[in-house]
Image 1 (tube, rainbow, N blue to C red):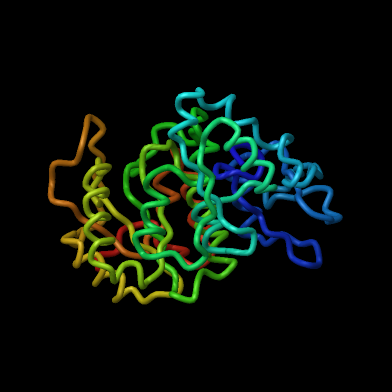
Image 2: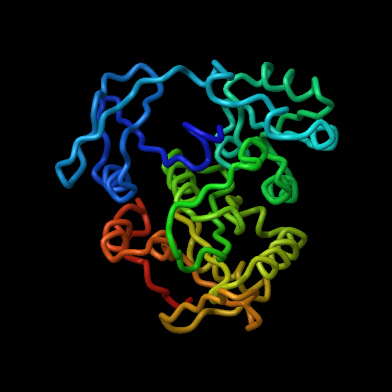
Length: 307
């Protein structure tokens, strides 16, 4: 999960007829990928990018062959760390859990590896409490976070706005497949590991304790103004604005963003709604232009829109 198919690898969905959308091909082009890896029984042998460049597609072993994809936990943790380390995994058919928490290809094999060294492995509740969904993402005990241990990754050089918390809000019925892909790719393209990318249900943000904890963590990580971006394809902008206000975070005015490279943002926290952060994390105008078209449902919102 830390390498191929993991949290730092964008996903390019393939349609039943073996096609990849133009927007997804733009993602691959901006990343300047050398090759793609394919899971499942598909006949795709190469990707042809909008630039005309061809990228080979390698067909790989399934995730169920755990040792081909994830090193044993004793390699990433000391025995002392494993005794206190917990691992929370989503169930294979839990779409929200998989995108927020992650899961190994074979839960029983992974469970045996972790418990052999004293760690506790638990399965994420498919109907989590609001605080349960939030804190599992914040505490770093999820399968995604644990299997990234000591493997920091960075994509962009001199990224801008990298400390802003990004919260993807989905309807209470759960995310659509496309919402999962969009959130996964946004998190994968985020430079560094120091900031927060969260996916929450609308009902989670109605919980006062969730909003209080979120406000504290947003302030903890904030080195930019705006300090938080709330995004959604299924919850109205008006509701997102109301949630932002209820956390005591003001509207970010104007189109100027500020990054405090030397430390925390000491100004009053501000936030924006339905802004695509990906272009801010790139360091060239070419990337800025191309990536603004990658977002599947919030295209053209790469500058701040006051709400």
